[in-house]
Length: 307
Ligand code: AMP
Image (cartoon, rainbow, N blue to C red; front, top):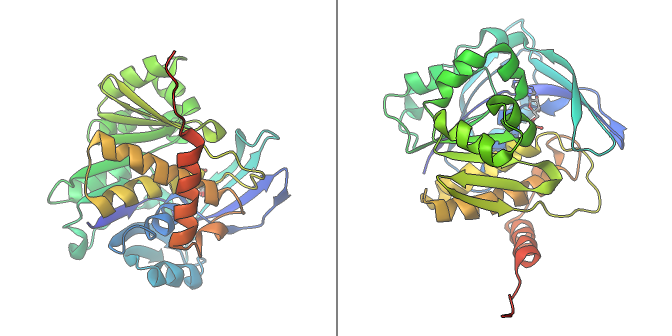
């Protein structure tokens, strides 16, 4: 099934306890599109970059089957730039710089050939732009998944709340769930956030895994314990790309299948953190992915003996 991905395509500069990068390729939609390409060859991108953005990365997306007709390149303008520094525990980070540049005036134009998409991933972006995308689709997709972050809760809470009413699944981290709901308990937070619109809520907890809430049910997937976590940037987006990519591939949006999608998303995220930026997502094989998913299976498999 076809998948439409909207989000930032950007430059990032990252500092972790293991090293530091100058401007490298980043952005929510870069991670999502690369990841989803391992599941579906029918993904389409809507995003904006400046003239400074390297054509090689656009070519790489195209080589992976991503349709980039909806990627606008703004002459004489600069791409979105984000810079972050991780703390020693790698679970928390400080944003050092957010330069919206082309994102500040982004008008998401949806090419006609994208109108039939069945799955929509609204990656991290201004909630007003996310809403515009939904309004410009002639037919509502079968499933709409949205990601957002604390930045938008601080600068555009009203628009964020309006957009939340229009989506099926929200994916955020634990800190953001607490900020959005005003509740410390994630169970209470989930209840409040579900009342804001999304029927399904994914709360990502970094190295502590992810929770999927639906009505009164909850599913938990651990994160794979890894020897080295090099750079967690984009792990959440990679997770989202694996989640929606798997759902688009299987075209089954039942809660049971979402559990599988969470495991595939977690497996993809476990690759992402092994190298800086998008590097590790370039050349994975089906064999790599199957082995990783099996490690997840083994991690949580046990035979419960009767008392
Ligand atoms: P994650 O680590 O999954 O939260 O995603 C990090 C990515 O989000 C980076 O590649 C950034 O370029 C991108 N990003 C950071 N802040 C924003 C923002 N305000 N809007 C859109 N994308 C952002």
